Image (tube, rainbow, N blue to C red; front, side, top):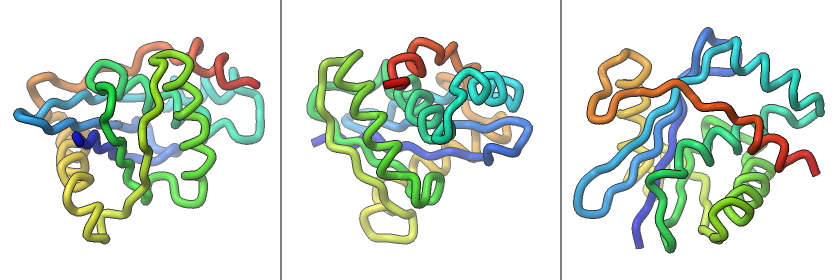
Amino acid sequence: MVVVAIDRSGNFTDAAMWLVAVRYEFDQEHRALEMSQADFQFYMKKCNFVNYREKISAAWIYECLRPIIQTGDTIEIDKDFLGSHADYVKKCLKRLLNKFKNSDHSIEFYSMRTKEGKKHIKRADKKSKKARHKELRNPSVKKCPDLSTLLDALKI
């Protein structure tokens, strides 16, 4: 079983936020995406519904995972970044994975303060901090691509 760990650096009120997905099998592989406050505001207006943060988070996580996740991988997300909204984000992320990847992955939320979280989330946490400070390389941080199609898929 291969785990893909996800962590975010920054808050929805910051000028920018960074999301990193780390997959470790034989070599460590990662993808990092930056979302500016302007992009977040654009998606917030586009969503125009109460649970916009959860849907934007799920779309952003999916886009970060998309190129590195494989069938059978388990997804572990830092619970600190979603807190009580984790269940709804999980539901939305599962919907996106089923629709666009035709796959059903196990998705778990862990805090880095737990034994389970320390194992994989810690790698993602280190990389998200490097991304925030523009120190992440190979590959470096990319601007988040357009999430409109993913958000439209979550309008149901």
